[in-house]
Amino acid sequence: MTGQGDGRPAHTGGGGHLERRLGVSDAVVIGAGSMIGAGVFVSWAPAAEAAGTGLLIGLAIAALVAFCNASSSAQLAAIHPESGGTYVYARYQLGPFWGHLAGWGFVVGKTASCAAMALTVGAYLAPAHDRLVAVAAIVAIAAINIGGLSRTVFVTRILLIVSLAALATVVVSGWSAPDVDIARLTPIDAGVFDVLRAAGFMFFAFAGYARIATLGEEVKDPETTIPRAIPLALGAVLVVYAIVAVTTLAAVPTQFLAAADAPLRLVVDAGRFDGLGPFVSVGVGIAALGVLLNLIPGVSRTTLAMARRRELPGWFAHVDEARSLPLRAEFAVAAVVIVLIVVIDLRDAIGLSGVAILSYYAITNASTFTLDAAQRRWPRWIAIVGLIGCVVLVVSLPVSAVVTGLGVLAVGVVVRLLVDQWGTRSRSDDNAA
Image 1 (spheres, rainbow, N blue to C red):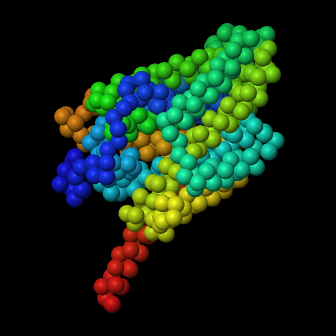
Image 2: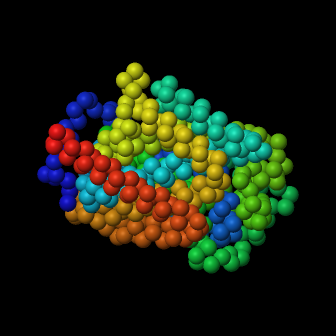
Image 3: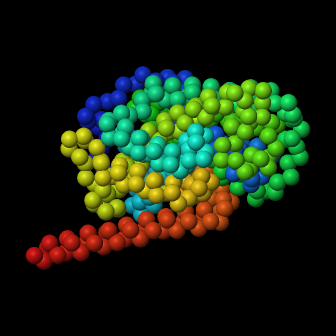
């Protein structure tokens, strides 16, 4: 099924076109800038706890799954050039139920990601008051979004530079440590399941890679540019992460990494340039706030779209005319994030996000199965590997995260059924009247 003749309006580009001004290098920068954010500063701790030095293998597995997911997203985005991601793609390729499940998975996963990003700000800037700082960060970002400020390509470049500068500081400081020892990377005595759990946590550090797949209207020659940009961006990010991983494991024993909420600060403190620790903390804070500047509006827009289709309560479908913003959805998302900050810790937030987002991308890969040969840009086996990888990483995460994540996804299905039933009853009452 390709979506033809399904009652969908033809994509005519009405309302203007985005300018095709981005080349391959631009798309790579945008993709890398969407990935290298706060996630890379916190994922090492739960990954080290799961697999010790085996997190290096987990990092490679996470990158492979991310590549498969991004490839599937790019193929679907070319066929369905609409905003909404897999929420839209799955509706056309698999049916409304799977579209709803993908949309709800996105909302849940990215809401948990928002909580994790805010808690990261607190862990690095004020560990003694991390939750208070996290709540303040969400309030500030909500206020900024209501004011109409958005994250542009220029801002993405600046945030990428800040993040890379902070990571470079970590690497230099780590290798200046008096007891740094590359021998700490061996032996890798973690089991297969431990390595897969580490991969599930490290997957969080690649969040944002699908941003490249949504650039179809902004890049020159998208049919060539996007397929080239995805592996280049992921490859560049993997190299950066590998350097940071080797440095971190060589500079700090894994048992200390596993117990830290701000693991890369430990690396800086272990070296001769420990005075640069505050610079790294501020860099992490800026990177995390930049991620939040995109995440919260993204979640609220998906909530708005689902409410308009009566898959969430219609109350969220309201758009404030004065600001032209879905304020109800914005406030609701911010409120839920604040509740999560109060009731769960950073690792739980990463685990919950992983379960929901990996489920979302499992549906993305399944949607790609329905494409015919003429619509494929990558071999079908890539989507198969992506689907299997998503499922395996989900079940490898902590049991509490899996149970909570799948339970919340089930709640979304129930809400859809209730809203649909309520809408059917209301229409019946109107007809009877």
